[in-house]
Image 1 (tube, rainbow, N blue to C red):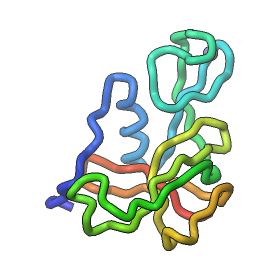
Image 2 (image 1 turned 60 degrees about the horizontal axis):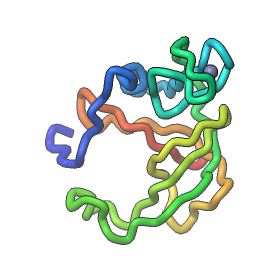
Image 3 (image 1 turned 90 degrees about the vertical axis):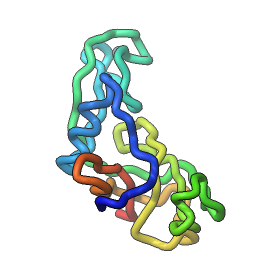
Image 4 (image 1 turned 30 degrees about the horizontal axis):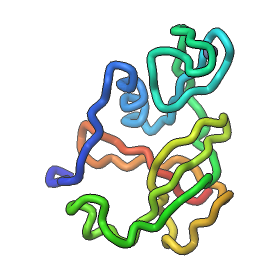
Length: 135
Ligand SMILES: [Zn+2]
């Protein structure tokens, strides 16, 4: 893990709780305290009603593949050893979409609508990435 060379996320003020939860192997998204909307990606105001009354909510991590592509060429030189790999949009049970990777199966086995669950990849001592695997 100490020689992890791939790009790492740079948490913002709004997204620090998401990354801290990921380190604990929990998936957390925001929920609006005014209108109840579930929100991802992390932000400072609700995209539905513009309320700043947002709370963090631990969710199941269950979802389905909304869309995906199989990367046959690396999207960054450090991903060379990973090709082919799946870049996907997962629709969480709560509704929001996350852009992620699907792991734990062969790329050609991924299907739109496939049930998936969050899988946590501790890539460095400080950073855990949220990926998904078949449920
Ligand atoms: Zn709202």
